[in-house]
Length: 305
Image (cartoon, rainbow, N blue to C red):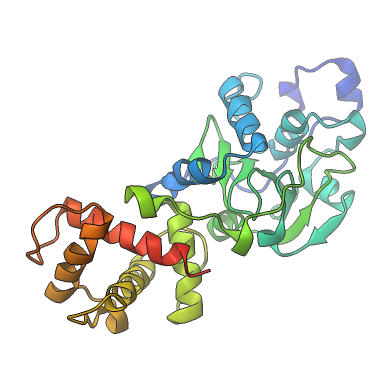
């Protein structure tokens, strides 16, 4: 435990506000790559009041009492949520046992819900900022985007995949305490629309939508975590090719094999005219062609569910 770092007053200390002890280790690295696009995409599409408050809290408290937030997930929930002293517990797992778990389906969680994991001796907890488990505020080094020293966001699936933690479900209360303003239902389908349709910039929600459609339509069996890789990229090309093929010919076989070729890129450039592409129709991809490709795929996955 980290009681030597506590600087709050005696009354809060006597209330048991140790609230440390989350799963993971100090050595765990923050995720990079495509996952870092999650906040830019999610905030543009879903900027809930609780999300805004979390950003402001992290900006004002990038460190916890001058140290790291790592291992202090319960403390973050208590302080950010301005929970009553009666909600204070010595660890996340103890708070979990004192909370009313409503569902194991993270996609059904509204804003302000608490998500719980069984990991290590003390468990882990985070607060849902936008609903649906895609943007969860937490204290850990296993983040999709860092907003300070081990404080930031990840999705439920992203944290679970990164750590191997067992997801325990979500509750609206933290040992009886609730975050003010919570309860807004998640977006239809569990995911917001992706802004990639409009700006051509891929992000976490874009890839989660690709993975969701891929699982339903193309045999994708990987995680729905918004982290791209070879399998997700293959599905992305197949979804894009299906959209291209629905708009006329010549037909590209990339819909079946996910391998882009001359016809695929020519069709991207041709259809891309409707998405702001102004370059040559030569079947040779470059930055503008790739941007058009992402916009076409974003359009497709936004209408897939």
